[in-house]
Image 1 (cartoon, one colour):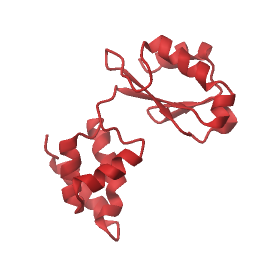
Image 2 (cartoon, rainbow, N blue to C red):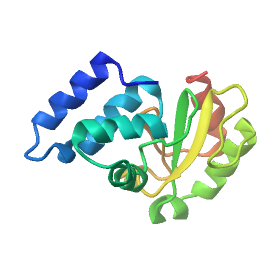
Image 3 (cartoon, rainbow, N blue to C red):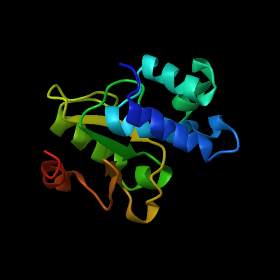
Image 4 (cartoon, rainbow, N blue to C red):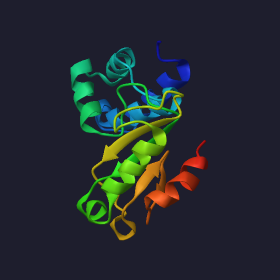
Amino acid sequence: MALNADELAEISRLARREPQPHGAAIEALRAVQRRRGWISDETLGEVAQVLGMTADELDSVATFYNLIFRRPVGRHVVLVCDSVSCWIMGCDELRGGLETRLGIAPGQTTPDGRFTLLPIVCLGACDHAPALMIDGDLHGDLDPAKLDRLLEDYR
């Protein structure tokens, strides 16, 4: 699917704000991802052209930045922090509770397409460990018992 006029305009606007157009790579990818949910190979190639980059150069950026999704994800992306602080405070138990409740392993999406479960290195919420983020909403001081209520908010 080709980039639409709104996407092209936003990418161009972002590129003009930078001394070099490729400086807008992450923001351009994020802008397209907000509309489409993920970045396909075709879309990545088109964004690269607008920014004056090769697809390989932009793919290097996209795969380094772990919040650019290069394959389809669910309507709600659950990022489980596995930093040292969260690990000490029980992120393994929290992740296990999510796996059980959602019926998926990290990196998978529920059959109904509602949730994708992903690990993330750090959410910066060490004082509220263990923590997770759903759709940009940070949730801390969690335990498996709190998961049912939390997940219900995103159903």
